[in-house]
Image 1 (cartoon, one colour):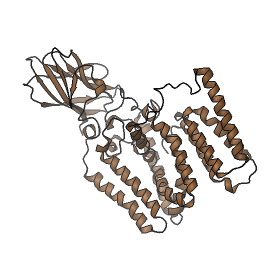
Image 2 (cartoon, one colour):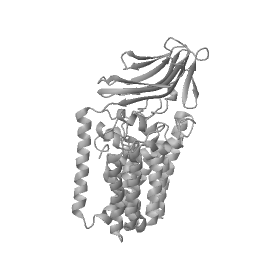
Image 3 (cartoon, one colour):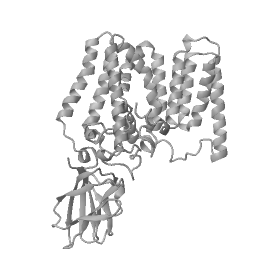
Image 4 (cartoon, rainbow, N blue to C red):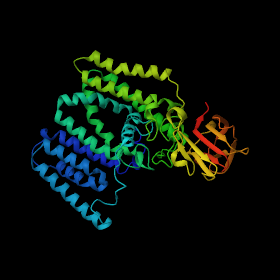
Length: 461
């Protein structure tokens, strides 16, 4: 599914690493059914282990976990061969890094490594459920892997535990990377390594759920293929950019409707949206995604003895999600994006007082006070909403500027009214098809006092 097939050439080194890890996991799971003598398969596995750290240093943990899984499954000459290959590879890589970069750890410095925290948790969730980067939305068939985790645990606890540790070693380094979701690369790249590992619990789910329901399996497979063709058509026919535009604070897309992704824009208000620095808990679709995941896990726990309860766990969250989706009302610019706060990095002057930003004559200099930077406006009209107060000058104390990448247009002058908070709503702003990033800027003119508390951009339907 997307993007593994359609953009396979853009997913390096993540996709090759995922293929190698799936091969190594399959080998560990079938070791007991094979003869103890060395074979060409074991030589390939040793070569795969040795190659993983050279693809990227972040795969060292996954290589060590894959080796540990094989060592637990088979204490024989196969494990000795793997140990020699992996140890030799790591030693050679450390020597090369020291020669090329002056240290064994390679080119990464103290500030370039992993950055655990709340943002890392949000990216981790987004790699599963986000509408652009989430593996479960790019190919919903992988969701059945959640059903298969419980049958996998019942079949072999050690196998399930080793799979979970290998999966964590594959996805956590990407979730904690400082360039969110893979930097300026193809969307979905950071999930390509771990997503293939879901094929293992998916197999357990297929055996538990669809062993006696072949037609249902065919219907699901057909629906999955139809979705992939639709996503590919939307991408190719509309010329959508699928380069990640949400990986740094200074260029990220603050609104869901300007977010590069596979799905049509009309769908995006109702799909999960996980992005660092955004109030993700205010997006109803995020909660629905978590409910669906919990229902699928519970469904796997109830199988196969309590099939009716399992179907209830599966259908219950789905019905709840449908009801909430039909009743909820979202405005993506205000409910999902920064509708109640300004972009802190957009300020070169002014001071923060609780939730507002204040600039005063004689204290703060003239200049840019706040902005929503670098969003891509689709064709159509947009409303700019600003809450502000101004006082201390008969002349305008500020201005609202629209910059479409070619020229700056003054949309409104902000005049004083004895410091009373007021709201201005500008709707005669149209997006174009130039493909250039646009910005909304609030400029302080150096006279009087200007306070701003909310700056948002909303599409008009």
